[in-house]
Image (cartoon, rainbow, N blue to C red):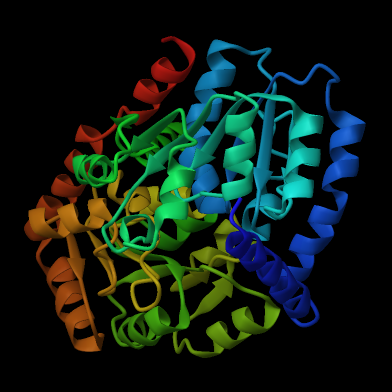
Length: 410
């Protein structure tokens, strides 16, 4: 692999090591990686033959999860090795029952890459969405391991399409097949000579449909909502989102709310509670009986938000005032209108939903108030927007089936 690339990876590792002195996520990552090889030696079957699925964090895992479930449903004896790079994935899904082994992926440094692959002996490698690690991919290619990326999406602004991006274009050539979300991605890849591409769609839509059909119940959320009160569920929020949502909510007693911050610790949760002028409690501390006397519940648990959306009248998805919105498919599948901030244009489903009328992008408190006022007072408009959202998700499912058949049945 290119000297400059390897130098960059080593610099990144040093930065994480420095950050670990004060940052809990960085510390967890390094501690987890330090156990990876021992975990593999203690648990791997000696003949290997693992299907290795790598997801950067929790969101990418949920994107790859339908494919893992399809593999285990069709071939129960298949061996699954699941790896994460971020603690937000590993710490939540380290006990995922369909994976035989779950580990942190070591840094993309040649010696660690070879040690990892020597132990795992993967039969197939599957990376989810944005995982393009040069040393891993080139070593997998050298060993003749069929390697795929699923639910990938490409944009002209990415390094692959820059005049100086030759090294990164070489990385893409390592994939046996790239499964992309849309035709635009296929065309961009074709423009740089990458043609082993299948337009399959986004497996996230299959995942959110699975969650919806599971119909998981949350008695405290059901009790909070009551029979006829509109319920806003604001999911994966950041402070910039909350600066808009909470003032509106405090002044609109006609609706109730569930707020699920994207990241939280005890201090952040306590600070959030203090911003409310209406009765509020943490989800972990609230019984159904207590919920009936509340106006808002703050979710302090991971892995429940996507199923909670089933109780929502409308949803707000956070992240749009930062690097980009989180998963709008999770609420949209329930046939409810979705709101989010202005930074959404990198996400195809959000762009489509805004264009079709199933979602609204807001840029400040005034726009949020206008959009929410319409949804709260005009039931016909709310139902119409929700129907658009639900129909959009239903019409774009099926990526998992395409990918599975191509990899395992062709």
